[in-house]
Image 1 (tube, one colour):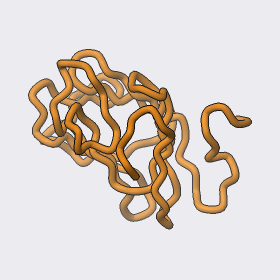
Image 2: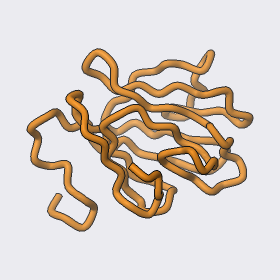
Image 3: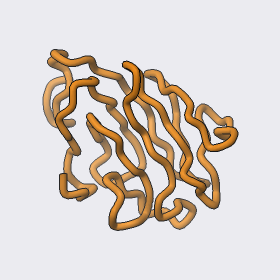
Image 4: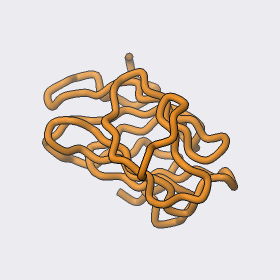
Length: 126
């Protein structure tokens, strides 16, 4: 993965995929491995808003579920409007809204399990 935000992001892994849509270049990401969200060039999913820290939050699979953890961001991370206490981790579910800083909102559109055929790019069938 080269971390370019304008592409659909995928990394092979056996835990299924987390599908996010929202306020970042490309509009949709399919994540299969731990991913750092932020403004920094080293982040796999980049958001350009000034209220987003360079290394803002991390989402990752563990024990058959997907989790989010704030990485000590300046403006905080909220899940469904509530600040992630102590930085997390907090389990993610389809329909969750993840807010980074004061304006970047990501929606968990689905969590696909291995073998699921519906983890296609945004321009493909849904």
